[in-house]
Image 1 (cartoon, one colour):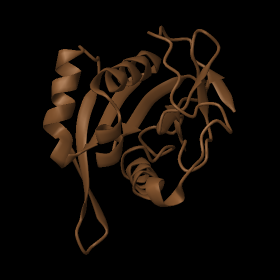
Image 2 (cartoon, one colour; image 1 turned 45 degrees about the vertical axis):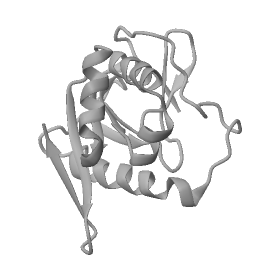
Image 3 (tube, one colour; image 1 turned 90 degrees about the vertical axis):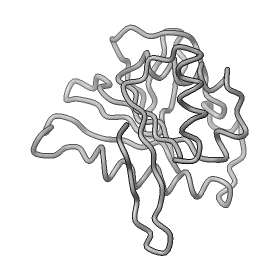
Image 4 (cartoon, one colour; image 1 turned 60 degrees about the horizontal axis):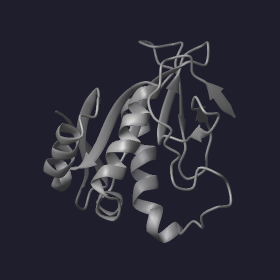
Length: 165
């Protein structure tokens, strides 16, 4: 399902693997990010709820549930997407991991985040150990994020800890 978002957007970033079948998934490599996306969506974007009964949350990991159409007609698949009753995108959560931040260059990360921020309010969820790197990229490339949040699992307890900055 693809949603057309009427808000103004920037750039034409197409995330790696946006078209089905172009990349091969490796369950063992992506397991930590998929678990984090699922748990963060449950903890912070659990819509609909009493405070936001008109919002609904979709996650695009491990399977794509909702694509957001860019101006050029391409689809972007943010990790977490919250839409309202009119199917307008309201919130986007992008979950980065140690691997995703290590394997992707700073300019590519900034471009991805800039485009996602053009779709709706963007919240970045990053590992605590990579916070300085992410802050530097956001500042250096002037990425308009609504907020940066750190995430980690407490060792031995499988409890997600999210800190708003």
